[in-house]
Each structure stands twice: as C-alpha cells, then as structure tokens.
Length: 492
Image 1 (cartoon, helix red, strand yellow):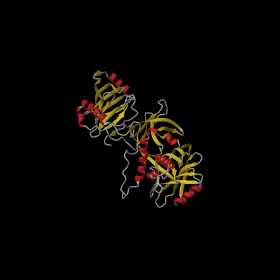
Image 2 (cartoon, one colour):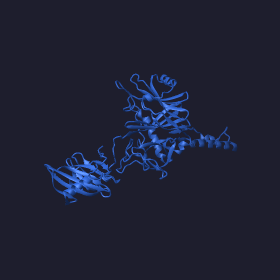
Image 3 (tube, one colour):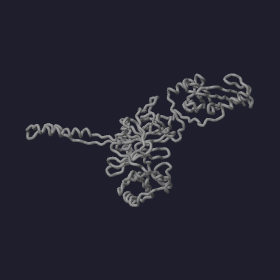
C-alpha cells in the first residue's frame, strides 16, 4: 500500500526572493534556505509503503514459502468498453501487494504461529522459473512435494523447533517495520458450528444495518472479540428480489462499520457465497489483529472446500475495507505429487529403452513417485495409457529398471517388494517377485504356471526348489504397500 504526498513547488521563486526588483538580504536568504530544507524533508516523505502482513505456507523449516498468487507482471488494464473490466482494480491491488512482498522479502522476519507467539525467520530465495524453463505453479496450495512459485524462508535459528505439518499450515508473516506503528490485539474467537451457535450482534446494531441496506436481517454472528474495543462478525440478510447479500461487520462501541459481500441467488435453491455453504455466509478466520494508526487491521483466512482466500480487513476514512490479497485453489485430491522435469525424464526413458528397445515407440507421459522399500528415496513408475505399457525404476544414483508392465502383465506394490503377474498366452500365468533394499534390487524370483503347474522356479537366474521359491515369495509379499501411487501427466 502506498500513500502519496503531492507537492507543487516553485523553488526558483523561493531562492531568488525578489521584492520590487531588489535582491534579498542575508536574512531573507537564510529564511529561504530554511523553507527549502522543510520542503526537501517533505519530498523525502513523498512515498510511504506499508509492509502489510502476508501468509506463509508451512510444512517444515525446509519447506515454507509465500506462495505467489499472480505473475511478476502487472495485469493489463482492460478497455473502457470491456464488460468484464470490474476485475481490474482488485487484481491490480492484489498484484501490488505481491510485488511489494518481492521487493521487501528480506524485511519480513517474524512468522506468527499462535496468538502472539512467533518464530524468527529469514528470506532464502525466490522460486519462479522451474528447471524446464517454465513458470512454477502459482495460485494453488499443493502438497509438500509439489513446488510452487513464491518466496522461500527458513528459521533464522536452525535449532528452532516447530512441529512439521503433513497437510500444510498458513501462518502469518510480519515485518518488524510494520510492528513499529502497530500493537497486537488479542483475538478471542467464538467457535461456530452451525446457526444454532450464532452469537448475535445487539438489536440496535442489526436495526441500523437493516435501515442502511434496506433489507431484513436473517441472522448475525459475532465471530471474534478484538482486544477491549472491537467486535468482528457477519450479518446475513434474507434474500430479496433474487439478491443475496451478507456483511462483514466491525463495531467499536456504538460505531458500526460494514462491508457488503454479494452472493448468488438461484430460485429453488436459495443464496450461496461458497461451494457447499448450504446458504450460510461463513465468517472469515481472524488469525491476528493489530491496532494501527487509523484503527484495527485484521488478517484473515476465508476457507471453502476447494479454495482459500487471504487478506486484510481495516477501517479507512470511516468505512470498512475488505481487501482480498490472494485466492488459492486447494488441491484436496492431489495425493503424493512430485514434478518430473524434462532432463530427468530423458534419463529415465533412456534407461528403459536400453532395457527394452520396444519402448522407444511409446510416449511415457504419465508418472508416479513412490518409496517402495521406505528408505527415504522414491522410485518412479512411468507409463503410457494408450497403449498401456510402463516400467518401474530405481532412480537412486543410476536409473535402473526394476520391472516392466503392459495391459496384461500388471504390477502390485508391497513394502519392499514388487509382484508382477499376468497371462502370458493360453492357460499360462507369468509371475515375478522383486525384493528391494536401499532403493536397489536385491533378488528376483520368476516362474510360469500352466494350468496351476510350475515346471521351474528361478531366483536371479538360478533354479531353486519349490520350497525355497514359495518361502521367498511368502516373506517378500507379507504386506501390501500402504500407499497407492498417484499418477500425473505432462498433458495435464
């Protein structure tokens, strides 16, 4: 955010100081110099940038960042006759906040994790262009293994402790400079589970808002108490003339400030503001509140099933402002996702083609990572959907093919082992059992059963007895893997 002090100066007149054609005296010059000094001081204060707090996505000290919600470049202003031009002002303001974060990333040094408890952090780097030379994902909250564009941070003290988060937590990132002119206000949240747990605003507050907006209130709820002076909550009106309207509200004594939020109305269904909200306007989660030079400044997260909006609520010029900073898509069904960079894919495909030249005819554009033997290093499963062929590789050190699959011969993953099995012509079933340790193949059992009868069992090319083979198989396949691989495609 920026405030501009616009000055109109006539410096030459001040320096010349002519009076009726006479030059100025020493005293006049001194006076002019004093005035000029004052003007120069004002010029220095021409632009003041407020380093507003932002949200940082935390998994662990090595994986925490402000996730970008927009591009480096400012949005282009639409033409005056563009019927969809209303998006521009909000998009420009949101871009300015991200740009401000980028330019001042090293000034943000506190991560608030609970109430007024914070951890000192330091800026590491910006992540914007991926190894393929393309933009990292932005505007989405991914799982821990899928990188995004943004500003990466870590703990200032490597010995600092904070519990890792499996699904990711949004904490508040704050600059010391911001806190020099703000005080933290304690936030007491009224837990909300349904309209039965509404804690309504006083009747006079609701009546005032009904008269202001010309609609009848259906419900109200005080969501949070902010320090000793302020209350934050929502008021939802009954739908009128197919209009759905709710209010974000802050009260200070008998002062009432509101911000309208229009929803959608569908006949037969009713109002809605978010997917699956069942017609209820839900309050935002106030993560922190500050008492600033111009009044309260709240930092909020507004959750929906597959989205998350963050921003600030504050009072300016007697009006309540709700300024969304970012709106993220939340990948709730992403599974275990990791990118496959082009350079790595080339190495893996090369290893597969060397193992079986037939694979040069297939586009292996689908992949899934999974740690088969749980040694902390992933293996990768590459495959093509049409035709259905694939290969599982160890990618630790040198890429090595562990097995191949097709539309008939399928792989099942166990903890520390792979079972490959399927029809191989007529009544015959081919079976291969591969054991692993430290991301490397340990041993391989192979046999073919025709109508249930096995002629020969081999282990690493050497014939073994049925007893040895079945014992090997039983030990290897004790427990199926507890995670099924999630496949991703370069065509997505």
